[in-house]
Length: 290
Image (cartoon, rainbow, N blue to C red; front, side, top):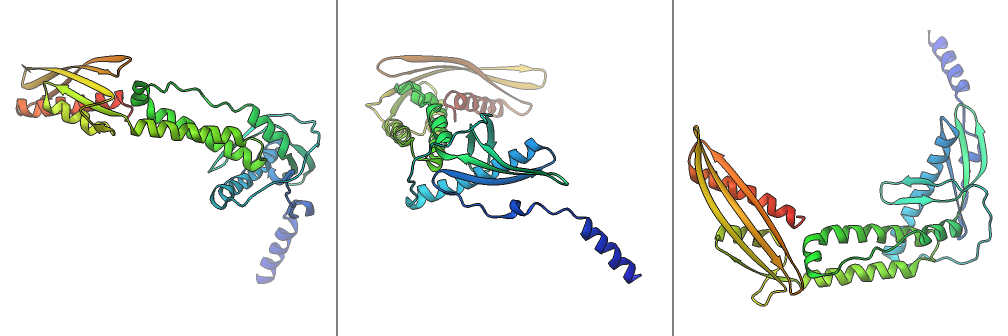
């Protein structure tokens, strides 16, 4: 029985297809080119995996550049590509789009095996030219309502520009511009202050807890909150309804918000009122994108 098992194992091992010798060879990247291999059930799947492997190399370089600041490039690239297929590859850390690549080797065995060569300069140039830094409304009110959205968008642009410069350093001016813009907006947001007037202390405290900016008498943002409270009973349910009128303004513009908040309880009106305030809190959070 043992000899039969050994015989079967020998057959299994002999039938196992090995990748081509060139597939396992280490191809050295340089300032002008990146080499990557990949395999898949189809030719395109193999290319996709090869591009993903190339993309992961850039992710490592990004960490090296922006932590140690020791990575640099030299040289000029005049290599010409015939393939202009756009392919988006997303790694766990950074999304990278390669506009051009060249298939150097392709072999089909049990599956497709491919070796690709990526032109650093041409791909970086394409990406840099097609990455725009958005213009943002920098008014106090727009920052108050959209700060998270704006800074998140800017951070994505910064990460993309870091990828490009890791590929080939020809997009440094755009990267520096994006970083400066983000710092400028952060500083402006940190300097925002608010004052609030309200006939409802609970609503006033809710707004204070939501806003992450300073409360000041000489404020850049002024908030006026007016509320009315109504109570009624429907069947065995006690219902509390709060109407809230918010006016938020700076010296140049203002925004008005009007909504109702409701809470119900079979216990008492105090519980219903507390639930209505909680409903108001959720709606105010939506206004400030928190």
